Structure formats: C-alpha cells, structure tokens
Length: 124
Image (cartoon, rainbow, N blue to C red; front, side, top):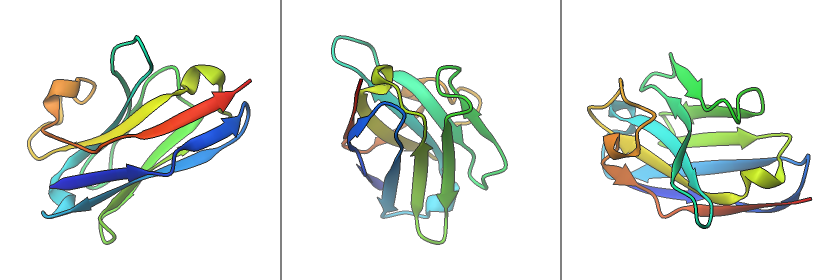
C-alpha cells in the first residue's frame, strides 16, 4: 500500500489542523494505521493508532484529549484532527500502515508502509 500524508502547515498555538493520509494500491481496511512524528534532533515518536475497523484508537499521553484519529475505509483515507496545538507539537508527521500488526502499535518498526510526511509548525 502507498501512503501520502498532507494537510500540515504553520499555525499559531491554540489553533487546529487536520492531517490526511491517503492510501492506494491495496485494500485499506486490511491495515492498521498509525501516526508518528519526529522533531529535529529527536527520535520518531508515536502519536495515535486506529484499528482496521475503527473499533479501537489509542493516543500518546502528550496528545490525548487534543488529537483525534479517524479513518474512512470507503475513501481509503485516515485523518488526524489536531486541536489546541502547542509549540511542542511542531514536527514532521508521518502516517504508517501495517497489515499484520496490532499489539505493538506504539512501535514504529511494527509498520511496514510509511508516507512521506507533512510538516506541522506551531508558533508561540
């Protein structure tokens, strides 16, 4: 499956953005989906996860209550709604998918397929 993330940009603290992850090439509903981010000089970190049928969603503590992950399997697209953005949310955001993973959804190496990333910059 090929993934393309978009929707990033520059926003003031307290603002909102919605990232999209468009998938093509395979049956999207067969894949778990995760969002990760990486800031300059830092390791890639888990942000959010959603199961194949949207029955389960989990978040990093740092974004819980502010970010919402969702997916529309009919449109082969996943989303990350980000509200109340903070300067520390500034990073390159990547979506990732895997056909077999589930238990270790917080671990980047669980995912075999990655989008190219979209930059989110939050100004103070």
